[in-house]
Image (cartoon, rainbow, N blue to C red):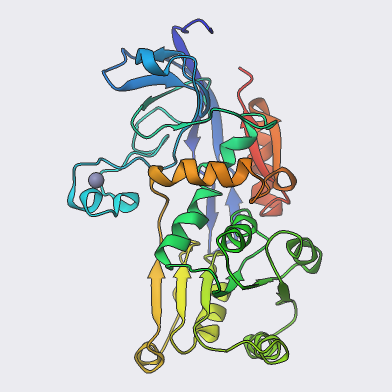
Length: 338
Ligand SMILES: [Zn+2]
């Protein structure tokens, strides 16, 4: 068993990256190494890495390997008590609402109630499984919000991104009949055909009308109804959201999984005429983590091709790379190396 350290070593963002819309200039953020004392652990708390081994706190958890959920509900409020705890307003998020205790650190203090126990890693390294928190669980919660059923026809906008690759695999694993992946990059789309997508449409150099036309052709040539499709918008971009709204049709559902700041215009009466729904989804209930972990461990959802582990000391360079080049081919997991 690891010794309980006196301090937590961590990377703190002392200045966020700022993009100036007028000058189009980006001022890079600043990350600094810091050391903070390990606090006295209260009842129901343990000391662990973001996906790691419990080394102090409640005796029953010591030595256990765990994944820490990205959002931890309060379990007291009306939202928690009515099954909507993933959007609890008093929820705790590592590095955000748990104060200085964030994930870019040697250790983190967390409540035990939400921990997802990893009993058998099935050959994975624990740090690889860190992507279960957020990237893989968010799509599962989105499926719950969409009331995804076996036999459903699904469109995923942003099917090749860091969350999109898991969105496609999750809907397929849950029994979707048809999954159409939409994104820009044709090479990444080709790969998506091996991971959940039955058909793909590249938006490169196409209007929304072109894309809607391609979707209609897929329906026609495969005998699929063009009503009742469930559309998951994962990019959070204006272009993605506008395409999603253009694809939304009779008794369809649009589920907004991605976040962005852009505003779009839409004739809301279409929802009335279509008898359609637009739904938001946030985070994932910790209760679903073991189910998602099981889907990953049983390879219903593949993570190997989409995860890259780097030493945490590369944090500044990694952030810079992602800010410059955009979404990387693989999601980077930073392993503490203080
Ligand atoms: Zn709550």
